[in-house]
Image (cartoon, rainbow, N blue to C red; front, side):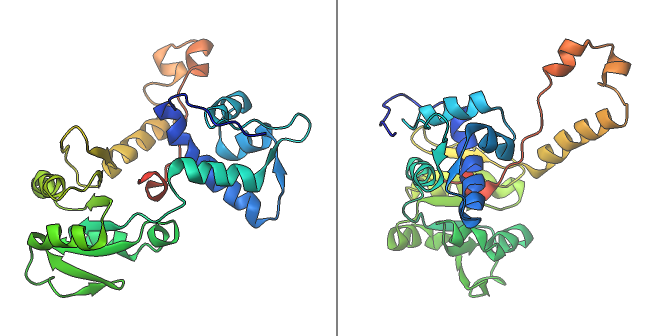
Length: 244
């Protein structure tokens, strides 16, 4: 049963929708027709009550004793995430990180085709990386207009990140995914998300230290079992599925 909900979807729920989407894709590939909230919760690494609450924001409710129809739920999530159309992407920065992102085939497969790379390094201009041409950053406005670019990815050194963000804003690119090791800002109408690999490694370091009995573990910090039960579990993230 599907009812369209007009309620605002919380940001935490939006962050979990790509995880459900990936899990449902795996089930669809296995020809699974229905899935319970408990099964989906196990695949997504959350609890079943949270799954049911998240899906209720989409106006989607499972059938008691049957669960959710995989194909329909997959469609509902794809529609909510805007994955029923393609969103052209440009990458600013043709260095090692930018090239690695261009070579990642998952963007195009998931509806985010990379239409151009841009740089200011004259030695990189005119090159083709993974089938994508490298243009001068000054050409950004023309490329955005030509391809109706929706998303800009910043893969520059830290000192060049804000300039890249400013140029994307000036060109009218509404969404930015920032891989540069720097905080950037933009106009209020622009959405900016940051992927900081160093921060993610530091978070993993925290959990690794706890496994090894270092500072912050119950034994060394004197925390109670209630404190331990409230600990936040690490969440696997896929940058390509949140970009939007």
